Image (cartoon, rainbow, N blue to C red):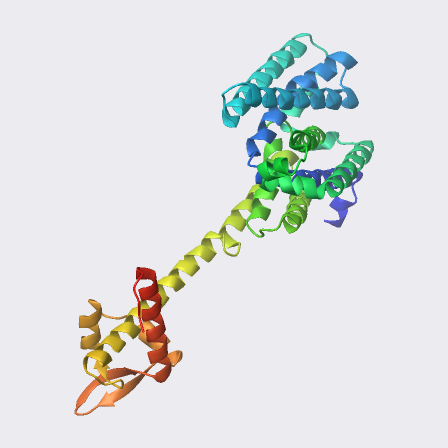
Length: 381
């Protein structure tokens, strides 16, 4: 590993992937909260004709011109999206589908035309579809770092406005905020993140790096600040781990590996996150079923005691089976005994086990009956 990290190429790709992941994670959080995850997909596909345009303008594979062209067509796609949504009756998802397909089709046609003209430089344009991490230079890191700092400064400067628009755009509009301009700024930043990620991840997979860290972070927190920080952290980890794994194994492209790791974070978060995770929900549902079952045992014992006019009435399992309509699980009875709500007693001359409610058990049973009566809308003493 130390020999691997000693390579200047690996170091450059590692830092570049981590920077890109952090920037994408930070900005992707706002796209996820605004329910515009497909916006990144549309803008990333819309960047392809800009790549071709930059190549034609520069007359070669000049990275600055290519990225500028990608940013131009990405911004143009965002403008077209807003015009379609505001000026027609089409919904946002339909507008996204139109913009994505049209711009990507134009990009494929332009790419085919350029490659048909021949030339060694034109063959390298295909790398912008799926990315080529090895092409990242140290000078590119300065551009990515400066862009990341600019995006961070903009987020911090407009934090309250971004937060309000992301959660309740109508309320922000009622407060007199220029919602259209704020949403435009967010869209431009998303386009910027896509542009700087084209060389590493490519047009096709860039949306995954933009959305996956934010989707994973959303499972762990309800607050915007922690979500943005966690999303940026997961994005940086995805980029760094993807770069290391692809560098240690021959033939693995960095971009797809980064996306797969980010997806793994999403799957883990969907399973293990507290409250929202599937594992947590399954355990919570199991605990709820156990509480319901234990409550039924308590109310059954209370009903038997009330029917016999004896608060210390001793009930055997057969009585509980009849009262509940099914045999109570042994684990539920043991759990109630551990909680001190019931206790096992003897009832000579019978030798079978009997149970009775403790004082705490009577109080719990009354509370359960009271809650059930409140839920039914009835009165109780």
